[in-house]
Image (cartoon, rainbow, N blue to C red):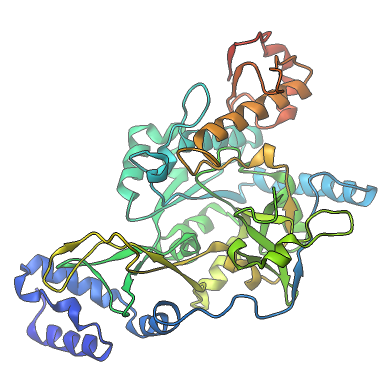
Length: 475
């Protein structure tokens, strides 16, 4: 139970920072509610909040493009000359060696709910595979198990949740027996939160004893890895490199020896995969060089003139799109935390439910405030060195974000079937196709059967004949 002196000091501090309304309902709270609210207020960084209010809530953020910049360069999906062929072979050998030594772990950012998919629960529990309806979590777990078996290694999996879905995610894994993985090698941890602000700079209350807060963005993983003990757990496992991806992409190649090897050979601290953009205004970040540093500039911050700019061969000048797949050194994460560094915050104008000064619940129909979040790509220019590997979108990137249309579950499943068909055809298996070229069958390849097309070629004799209209599951 907080004593009067604590409350008096806190009220004075809040008044100095113009946030005294956070204690407006104090007389109406019971002892437990008071203790809880007090703890929430004590967690606030009010000095930092004043700066956020000035620059991100009341003020307009500075224009993001303050320097000369140019398109970033990347490694191509396939080597284009003998020197690169030699380097790629060396990189693959090095990447496989590091994976087999247990020096590479998986890091999934999974703090989102499936709301936009019309799904009630963590997005990672969304069923997406074409035949077995495996969830995203299950697909990743089976892939990790297959990688562990291939390389005879322990491949730890770190999963960052949010307060919105942490307990649900833990319960899902416990109920599903950790999708067949050893629980000791699955580390589930929560990201942090930041207060929500009204346009007047006042921190909103979600209830009389609850500050309105929201997750601090995927960039919050930098601090959360240290605070949660995940970074210490990585040290215990001997992990030096993190394979990072967001939970919505079932085609991601979790442990890519080429990507890991190129990253290490070039002495990088944070590296990225990219796709060639579908068009000038595709809603992905743009990889650029700003003052010689690899930097992601959001599609909304790139002018139409630059977005449309072309190279002599007619291709887009700014063609490399960011897809949130990275390799991150654990030493780099540790360095940022040692320096007390936090990534820059970005504002998002939102409709934020809250209570008013009378304690009445408000469900706004129009945006009424600002949420703040950090993005993992802002860590890239902080690295001494960073590389980009351009990948084939159809092989490794099919995010499921929307209930319908672009990036919907239907599109994702179609891409999963098409990739399976392509892998089978590359092994010499005949796949029936419709007049429009799409597979005239439903296919699903489990990670236990194949992690890549080379695995399919090695198991060609285990694939049954495929007829039009067939449903074929390979495991």
